[in-house]
Image: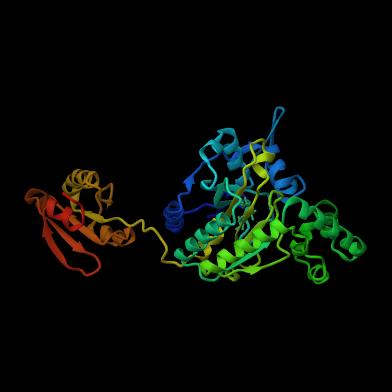
Length: 420
Ligand code: HAM
């Protein structure tokens, strides 16, 4: 039957059969990020539009073309297209800089939905989910390297082997503006050879021409100047210190001097992790350093570093067995009305003791109940009829081996691993 209503284009339902992978992923985040002392932060999905314009950047595609914006009276609010801006806003609003000291930055992580009005395709949705981490209060290369090391450990533990860490440095704002000027000079005489989109970008946001997917443009841009030659001494030293630490930790990476990222707040280290398993939307995650952002949003001079992972993309790369099983511990086979009545009371006690118990809510033939039992994923079936209730002893069948024993309620709990 064709449904009258369907989820909006670019959004999708996560059904119970796939939720086990998402739960596994969320548990892994809490486990691994917790080891590095990151703490969870939850911010609203709605924020002032200006927050994103000021941070991500007015001329970026994300803000310029992709935001879901609502005008309410004289207030313009937007669904968050990303969460770094919101975390920094919260950091400033709640004076969280008071919690940091030199060498002891604040570490936050988040898991949640983001919204971008993009053309949906494989790996690209309008509502998607990110796992993100932000470190506020350290400009030290050790902070970049530690966070990247955590990220690699996380991906290793999830079994994501097919991946590549790609790094670049965008330098400090003055290196970047010298580079920008040089790039604009280089692009100017070649404008006519560029695609229409790049012609627009070369005026508004020239570094973004490197994201162009048009083959002719890519070929032309091979000879364009590279940011590496414009890095000042401090930025260059910072980048080489980050790379030296990654080498020491045995973390493989490739430096791509043309990687610029699509958000304006970055400076110095930027990175992505890409996977060939993803198709054309090949970035599992992206991030970098944003030392000027806290200041830009009205806070003190506090440097920042972070990343965000696309959860849909990550789930699609996770091995099948990375799943939190939603299986019942026990399925109750209730024989007749008496079995059902007594079964309800027994199930209440077993659930109170901590077991997941599946059972029907109407009298059903035993054959039908056994057939459904397989779907619950339960390892055991318990037979509950008038005789069993009378004797206080029940048949417990191991659904994998077929072996059956008779147990009372206490023995049942012990067998199923509940401390009595
Ligand atoms: P971003 O590169 O815009 O960075 O997004 C990070 C990741 O989110 C991407 O690599 C991708 O996996 C996923 N993603 C982005 N857009 C979509 C989409 N339309 N559909 C599916 N997945 C998508 C940021 O958002 C920054 N806030 C990262 C950051 C945190 N930088 C510093 N801290």
